[in-house]
Length: 181
Image 1: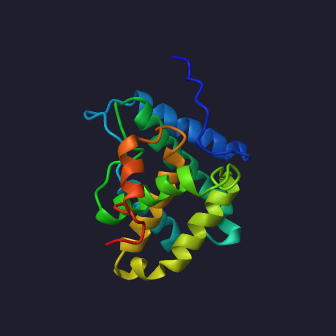
Image 2: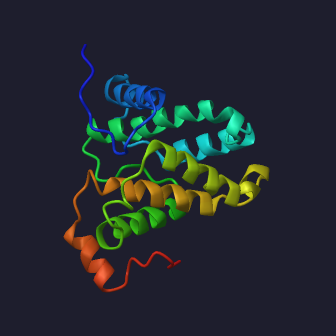
């Protein structure tokens, strides 16, 4: 079976990252999964925590971060094979809040350049997120980590899911404020 041509949600400069992304898309599209749903927010959160705990964000281990290409490809491929209305499945309230905030930023605040990520930028972003959330590796609260993952995926989702009138109405009335509890 020939691999489908899928335009990545990010600009990929590293060939190994690109290969991993394509594998993730392929796996999500064609693996035999019982439920055809979006990938949960926890998939990326668990991966971030694992990579940080192993010290892979250190420069000498940067080559191991290409595996994030697979994770992002899984998110992308999963929504292509479903009737999904979001880039992920929410298991944590904070990821849902972050996702709404990311979508709002995509459609109302960010320039084209600001909402276009490269693989290198994403790895730097993930490293910074984990640096700012080190306490979650020691059993601390990971709510902020879920919010960050939701926000990031919310920005990416703008490429796949058009702005809904309901979102716009909520933003106009202030019901979807990013900082609301």
